[in-house]
Length: 184
Image (tube, rainbow, N blue to C red; front, side, top):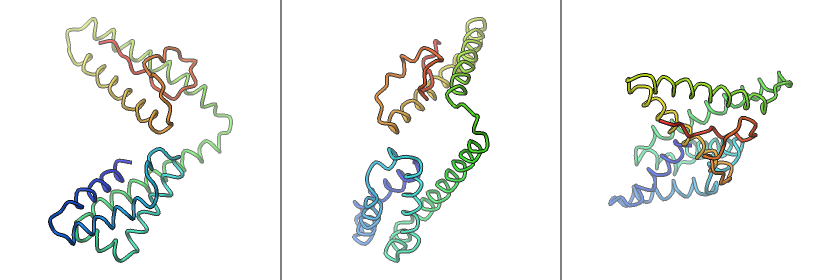
C-alpha cells in the first residue's frame, strides 16, 4: 500500500506546481486514482489487488495518463506500484494454494502456537536483558515492541476494529494481533 500512497502523494504534490501543464497532469493522475475510491487500504486483499491492477492498466494504456507520468517523472513510482502489487498477488495466491492443498491446517491453532512461541522468545530475550549489561537486548526488545505496535495498528486500520492491543494477554485469543508490550 505504500506504493499507491507514494504515487498518489507525488501527484498531489505536483498539483501545486508552478508549471501549469505539470499541475494539470497531476490533477489527471489524481482523478484516475480517485475514480477507484478512497481508502483502498481498507478493502480486502482481493479488492486492493484488483484496484491496483486497474490503476496500473489505466496509466499504461491511456494516452493522457502516460503523458502525465512522463511529464512529472513518475515512471519509477508506477513501476514500483506494478511490481509490488504483482509480487503481493503472487504471494497471496501461493498462500491460498498452500492452504487449499492442506485443508487440515487450523489457522486458529497455528496463531495460538505462534503467540505462545512469541511470548517464550520475548521472555528469553528479557532474561538476557536482565542478566546482561549489553544494551543490545534492550534495543532488540524495543524494536520488536515497535514492530508489533505497527503491525497491530495496520491490522486495526485494515479491519476497522478499534481493539486495544495492549490488553491482549492470553494465547487463547482468536485475534490476529501481536502482543505488543515488551518490558524493557
